[in-house]
Length: 171
Image (cartoon, rainbow, N blue to C red; front, side, top):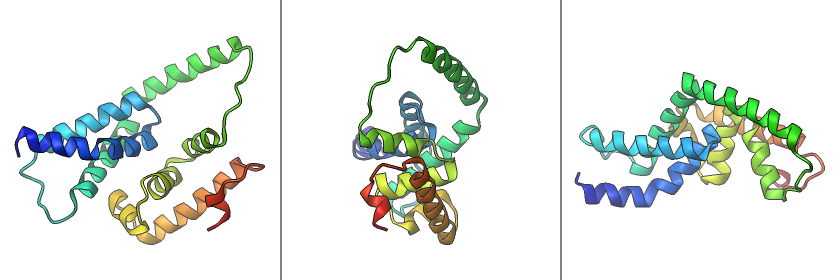
């Protein structure tokens, strides 16, 4: 693989991989770093990729794994602690709340879900993956994907009581 091939792959899949990484880490800068690391690893290990499956799924799986590694890292926990301290101080200084629109509320509610439910919902609704694709990308059985999707929807319903979200109401 040469640089032109890598540039073409990056142009095609960067946005898709960013959405996946952001769904896990909830931080755009960290997601961008993770996607960059995925492309670097892919470029350096291009001999290991066998074209048995779709490249998009291969890169998605690499992104999921990098994101999970990041969430387990000490650096992430340190950043989370600093962020929570800054947010707590910022709330005291805030003089009013800004009303959010429905899409922001739903996105925020999804990001507040536990990781197991959040990752399935993000892949299903935002990345428009099938249940089988999700099972393959995050390496869990199809039945587990179905269960996590159902539980994630239930948790969202509880968080969004009083709001209408068409996808949740028409299963």
